[in-house]
Amino acid sequence: MKKITLLFLLLAQFTFAQSPENQAVEKVITRFFDALSVANIPQMKAEVSDGFILLENGEIWTIDTLASKISRPKPEGYLRLNSFEFLETKIDKNRAWVYYKNKAEITSKTRNLTIKWLESAILRKEKGRWRMELMHSTPMK
Image (cartoon, rainbow, N blue to C red; front, side, top):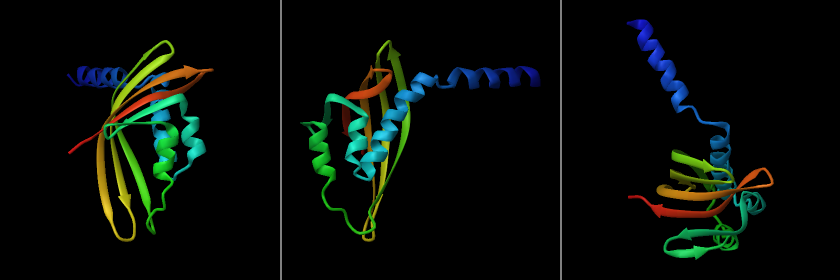
């Protein structure tokens, strides 16, 4: 009985293991938000394709729109930490789509805030590197 249980545990581990390509897609999302958290515009732009579009709060934003929004002055002690729960990542040749839960914990000397979104992104592989073409963000309650 113990051998059967061990076999099932091993099979489950391999079944849920992420492929390297799926991990590469998800790392684009992570790197993008790491750059966004510290307003590193060049790094954000490195993770998106030309013509990137963000659907945010019922508006259509470009990477320059987003850069403008996050470049505003921040309160003293500002820190944003993102965490992700990737729900599904699919790849078909040079296209990928992913949906995930994004949680940002934002702190400063005067305020603590947690914001959650359900987001999706479409990526395209360009010259061997995944880049985001489209992201859609929906606030969660």
